[in-house]
Length: 208
Ligand code: AMP
Image (cartoon, rainbow, N blue to C red):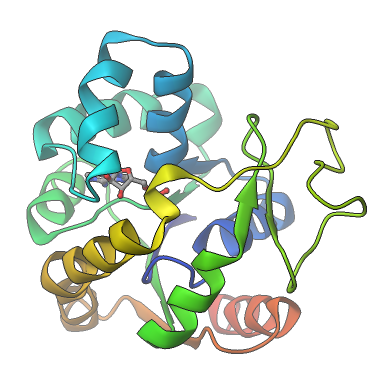
């Protein structure tokens, strides 16, 4: 099962990818998480990506594809994978398709207004566990349920950067919907429903 998820920031890509990963026993690969881990570890890649990410721009395609290619060659991807945040433009999709064939591209549609609302309330801990202040709050305000670390707002989730990221989504990423529709691989999902319902809709369409 070679899957990828497309959708604007805040549509729930990460949440759904984690669930699909558990259900089907395939790894969840998030380029955003890989970059954030590198920033945390202060690697060369992290240093290069940090400014770009904080400006809401895309990391260059060759660098991003290099990371994905290496990750997809790992053993745990043999039976499939779920990509979250890659590809982000047509060029990346072409690079991916020249390497491995995608089975389904899941498009989780969410209007900008809803996406902005969700991102504004998103909080995360240093280990990448994600919450929302009202939609998915931690048990104790400001503290991660899993690792007890403090929760904070990602720099690139601040309002001015969100707007830039959504603009990039509309200009660069959204054309992927048509691209994968033309390939007969798109699965369209309404992202403005409860998490559980979105998940059920995805599974139903995948197993149709
Ligand atoms: P995300 O967590 O997927 O929203 O990613 C956070 C940031 O990482 C994005 O705003 C980009 O700056 C960068 N990034 C993640 N995935 C990609 C990608 N496929 N291509 C280029 N930049 C990316």
